[in-house]
Length: 372
Image 1 (cartoon, rainbow, N blue to C red):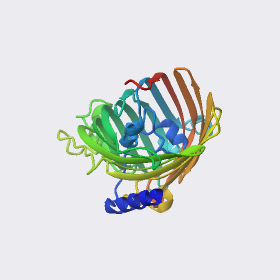
Image 2 (image 1 turned 180 degrees about the vertical axis):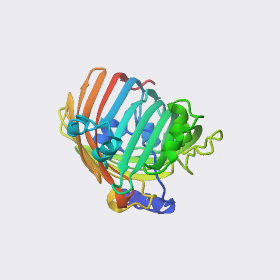
Image 3 (image 1 turned 30 degrees about the horizontal axis):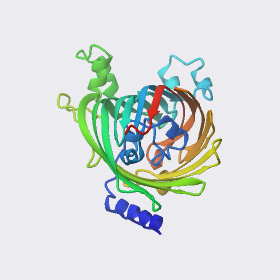
Image 4 (image 1 turned 120 degrees about the horizontal axis):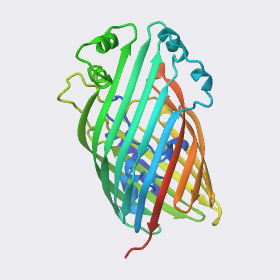
């Protein structure tokens, strides 16, 4: 009964905050989460907690340090290696070869720590997405973000026991973003004018004239998380509102700047974990993400699963973009995982399936329970 009541409150809250539909830019996603279809709202109890739901801090004890980590992402070039063989010097032929092929480059690092129910993470995140589409009238869409900053949060547990534990949390983030989000016609003069302008002496000047800008902004996230244990496992459910009232970026020095904003996003999540002794845990998770964006239902749903073994974890997931899968090696103070995930990018009428690979390495993670 309590679980049904929580689900009702969650859905009701989602309807209350149902807001405007607009493009949504993320500033960091967990590599493990992406390999699980990004169904990670209730599972982000690692270095990515503050990028998913600050309420998860309410279930943390002791001290956890995430000293050094780095994630790298790129298109699945192994499968598409033929596209990069013998690339032509002719722009027309290049456009034909890479038409509707989503180019993706990603580099990130999020060192941080958690002390009891408080946490702080520092952010370095670079992402570039380029998509060339429309064979008749070619357009090039560029989405570039270079973020630096931090996010700090705190959560409070409202009680625990047989009825389970409910935590409420909030976080404040500061992001310095250099970015560009715009679409350009390859048959138009905008790019040519930027390149040929006498005022543009280098690549940075050209990018600035095309809309590259830089600004800093503060944002707020709020979340709830509920979890309970049952014989042989545990259940969790949560709701998070990220970038409350939107996080906006405006470059006052460049009125033509097109910096991608962080629009408010509401997500629901749930997960079940079944424990089979000390050798095996089996987790299933499901998320409804960005439910305030007016997207079709099939683009909201994310599913994930993980088989947790003593040294190796096996992850798989599904979202509208397709299936994802990967392996994680966890040995002493080293955590390494790699895999392939898919993303469905662009609006419904011209969405493109993007297949990406990622590698993530974390060193010197350690935790101490029960400091007091």
